[in-house]
Amino acid sequence: MVAIALVLVAAVLAAWLVAGAIGPGLFHRHMAEAEKSPGTVVEHAESAFASASAVTLAVALFAAVLTALVVSTVLARRVGASLGSLSSAAANVAAGRFDVRLAQPHIGSEFDDLADAFNAMATRLDHDEMLRRRLMADVAHELRTPVATISAYVDALEDGVEDLTPQTVGVLHAQTARLARLAADLAAVTQAESSGLRLDLQFVAPARMVEASVAAARSRADEAGVTLTATVEPGLPVLRIDPDRVGQVLGNLLDNAIRHTPRPGRVTVSVRRLGSFVRFAVEDTGEGISTEHLPHVFERFYRVDTARDRAHGGSGIGLAIARALVHAHGGTIFAHSAGPGLGTRFDVDLPV
Ligand SMILES: Nc1ncnc2c1ncn2[C@@H]1O[C@H](COP(=O)(O)OP(=O)(O)OP(=O)(O)O)[C@@H](O)[C@H]1O
Ligand SMILES: [Mg+2]
Image 1 (cartoon, rainbow, N blue to C red):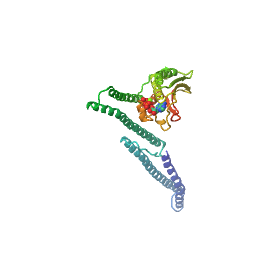
Image 2: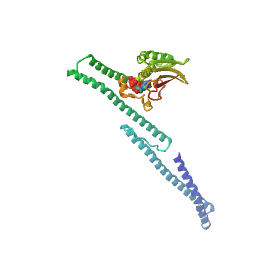
Image 3: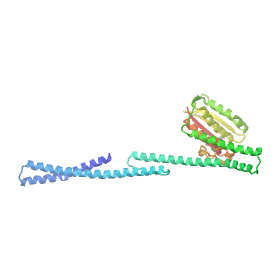
Image 4: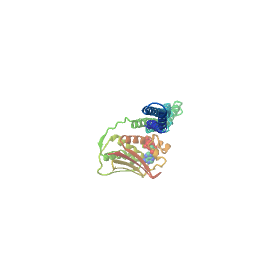
């Protein structure tokens, strides 16, 4: 529109200027000639009018064409440059280089939006690629230790260096169990994070979820010397959730809380209403998590104390599964901790 307006303005301006500057002069000359040469005044006036309008029109048209040419060239250059950089950036992304970013061309909001959308896509792909690489590295790392242990023991048995004692069998069992667990965890997290996760939604009272998860964790808590309590706010609405999946979330949180709370600690599961959400909270008086680790605990394979958490049998996937399941319910999950030694609280908010 601006381009067309420019062309029109140029034509009108030229016509107006020419009509104002040249027209009267031409007219005047013709009329002056009329006094000397033969012919009627009307004829002279007509020819004066004709030549004045012809010159005006010609100059105005010329100005319009010139402006149109300049404007079109500039526009075509800018649009072309913008599309050119877009297509070369797309080619880069197709070749696996996700760090390309487009500058906003500033030739209309649609072009700027396109550049923004492209950048968002490249950022997302970049992030996913990084996660994929890290996942592969983590899986390889997790596999290495048990496989190396098993293989060393098998070699030793074969060479007769080691006998098949109950102790050796125990070690082999523990390592194969760790591999089996890793495989199961990987399958679980992949399923939980896939968009095809199917929820079997039912109407469930929040109190029932709390009771069931506390009952399931009771013996582990007793064994660990941890006091396990539940508090349920009265008058809570029923939730439309998949009870198995939410049970899995609370189970993972309780498992962590009990594992990271030294005796004689306390673990509390509570549920209350919070506006349009129902908040399940699992709180412990245990080790706590420092602020630098807090944002990462939901990442796959993330463990605060890698060596010790692994010795505890954790593969660092429990919270990744919990987060994926909570998101699948349209909810959110947050971790809070005042710091090491000050306990931890996990809040799970599910929509009413
Ligand atoms: N209640 C808690 N108190 C202190 N640290 C915690 C607590 N919950 C989780 N963490 C930390 O967050 C890390 C990640 O937890 P997550 O449940 O994902 O893995 P994990 O418990 O190590 O293994 P998994 O759950 O797969 O058996 C844990 O290794 C632990 O360091
Ligand atoms: Mg865990």
